[in-house]
Image (tube, rainbow, N blue to C red; front, side, top):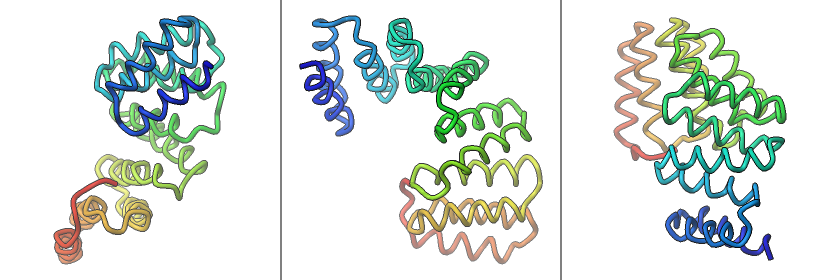
Length: 210
């Protein structure tokens, strides 16, 4: 029965029917408040609703019941990142990666935090860890873009930045975002004509995710 209830709540969450998903998780927890998986799912819903403090509470409930689940530590880190509590977020991601070092999303989040903290070489290594694990799925597009931004804006390594940006464009060829970033990198490297051409191409595309 628990799996059926959890699966139904998860399906609502994945359909972005967040209010219904939250009610489903709350119903499940009313029946079994010691289910770590359900608390974790509730945290995911609250996070995507932008209720980061509440999400953090849910993840902490999950971890109090079962501290050996990497994804709950990842969720806690993600909530703390959203709250800009970076030191605590890094500690949560350390726990997550100790349990599951092959999770590219955790490495990406670590890179993002280190990038924002100005620890650029460490951030670059974290992005590269993420891409070594997944460089071709849709989830890697933002990693490639963040790596490109770091290399160009912070480290002045424009050729490498352009190569990273091209990877992102290959994975999301119809998105204007990659081409706009390419224009920025080309302009920073001194290629004004290339930047204008990239900007012109971006105007023919939809500015949407991914």
